[in-house]
Image (cartoon, rainbow, N blue to C red; front, side, top):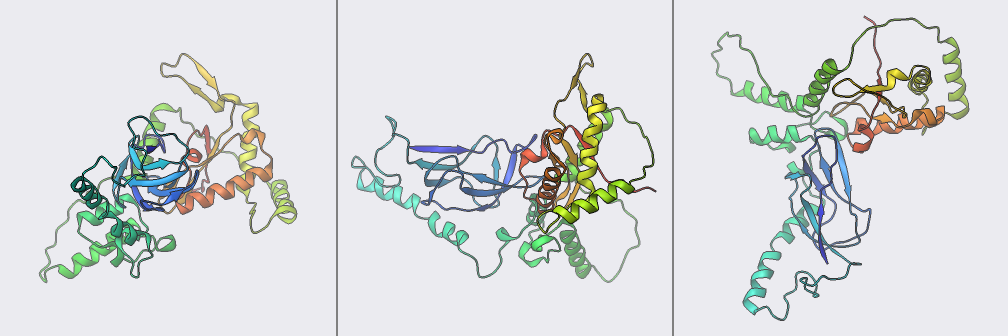
Length: 343
């Protein structure tokens, strides 16, 4: 039975995403939980797994296309499902006995052309192409607007990722080469759209200022004993796979403080008639990744030990910096801790 795989809700308020790379092609057999495609939102790159065992019969989008949430992403012939009354029992793509030769030939001609193109995408290219360049949807759109091949731009990000700064530098250099010899001294304001993570940051900061009471409190602490505890933890439990910084200690200390002052971990309703004390200490931490500032959060810190918190800090930091992070790790935060440098 053929089923459409619907692109699920992959983040807070995200309604569309860019198809980065298909891991399969039409006709491939796939298993449940196998990664089918990588998509990119304005926050991160997300891996989409299959929910079924079966054969991929149709990919609804090409790489670099924009896919909509709650719309079909690909079609799959489910192996374990029984065929429904209106479904043909014959394998997908083969003409049935009731079809005329002309209809079968027409159907075959419609199905065969995409195969070479998909095969070309699946095979490792000899030369880097625009579709395979690591970057964000905003940069890809900028490249399309200026009719540029991303493969010709040197990326300075992790694994050669082309950043917005790389694109602007390339455009400035190109404009400089094409500039006329006569220069006109003029001062002009420059405008550029706010997109992607920067747009979300601006919206969240404005919302924070409007909905959360703000105050500033400054104090000094002697953390000599805390530094000694960290040194002991590093000596007894630290490794290449577990790096114990001060952040896990601060996060756990914040959770212990919330036990004493639960109102700090509370939420007021829209008309300010009711206060909800949150039972979970989902503590977020700001991470400066290649795609922008992300704030993943560690769930239920009140139930975790120091080493468990340290493992989560390592995992979420690496995921945020790489840009491939589970949207669930970005959602549901109740309070955030951040490094603040004194002026």
